[in-house]
Structures are given as C-alpha cells and as structure tokens.
Length: 169
Image (cartoon, rainbow, N blue to C red):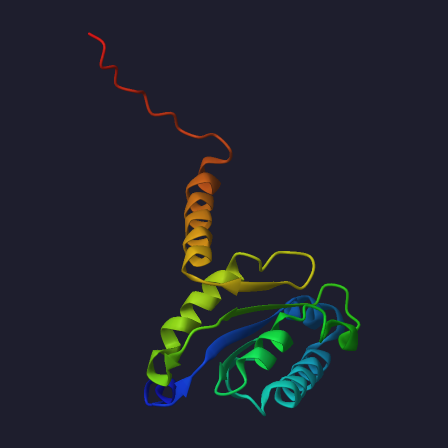
C-alpha cells in the first residue's frame, strides 16, 4: 500500500467498512448482481464520507476511512449499524464497521487498518451488521478471544488438562 505509506497527512480517527456475504449473492444471483452491489456501496460510501474522510479501497468488500476533520460527525455516521443494509435487500448481506478515534499520521494508517481488520474478523460470521468502537483494551480483548478460539477449535471441545504440581510433599 504505497499510497498509505507515503501519506504524511494528519488524521483524527480511522474506520473500516467490511461487506460480508458477497460470495452468497454471487452464488445465487451471479457476478453482475454482485458487481452492482459493490458499485452501489462505493457510491454510498463516497456520498456519506467524502466530505470528512480520505477513502482507501483495499478490495471490493473492504474500505478504510481516514477522518481528516469533524470527528464527531464521522463517529456518528460510522456507528450507524443499518445505514446501508436496507438499500440492498439481500438477507445474508452484512456490513460490519469498526473505528478507532485517536490522532494518527497517514504513514501509520496501515497498522491501524490491521487492528481494525482484526476487530472485524471477530464479528465476520454474525448474522446482522455490527459496529465495534475500538480502543487498546477492546483490541486486547478481541485478540485474546481469537487466540483462545484458535486453541479451542482444533481440540473439538476437548480441552487438554494440564496436571497441577502439588507443593505438598
């Protein structure tokens, strides 16, 4: 992401928008319908955030928002959970969003994007669109939960018990 790495602008907050369920739309309705949804989403994101944010498109379903002014308006807009959902009309299509509200330099935006992608990954399978407001404590909690899930998953519910060492002899 050379665009981000060479960016020396100052930002007030950063957010991410993830469109989940595109593969289901594509499987049922085809690539043309999927592309129509992506174009509509891009248009809506631009209409809603262009006046206060720089928008970076990672791919068809992932968008980074770098808030350059009016952080209160940005947080209010990004925290709306169902602002895009009703316009698409597909049951399994979800839009997850996450934000961190702290000042940052443009060249550091990539590390913030990685944190927000981690937050989004913790809710990617949720049935409804959701928003997560992140700070360091929330990110640590998410990271810990993902770590626990990775350990638990291969065990298929059978936790290995580690024998305790007795100090009584």
